[in-house]
Image (spheres, rainbow, N blue to C red):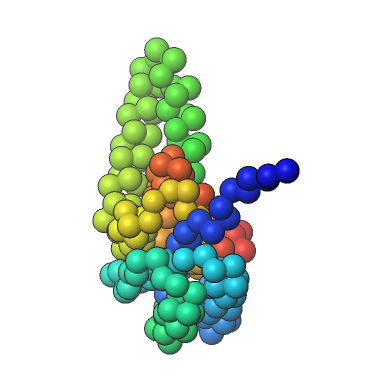
Length: 189
């Protein structure tokens, strides 16, 4: 009996936000980065790496073999910036919730509903435009352009300056056939 098994060696993408709030977050970041890359290396899965800060894309690689991916991850560990005090007072907008609200408001014919819909449309557009310019989005989209689906994307982030950009970009990449998971370095309140 022949058994056809799907090739589990699809390509992986690891995206890393190199800005953290303190040394504890830096430790969690490097731990998650190295263990993720080592796990993929053990399975011989080609891995593309990308790293970014709030201001720029720090690095992008094509899919690398196991040895090169581990070397690149170790190199990235030395570029973590642990002196950023980033305080976010408001929760990140929930794009799915905004979309649901917009669909519901389409059916309402009242003037207040029309005005609220306009405000929500403005918010959605502003979030999406801001996300397109953020280094997290640029980094992920560039690497994804060279790594076709069904690649697995793993994002390792303190979920600080990049939360909105990642929400928008990962939503769009999932629609294109990528699988994505986010490893958040701190619990959300």
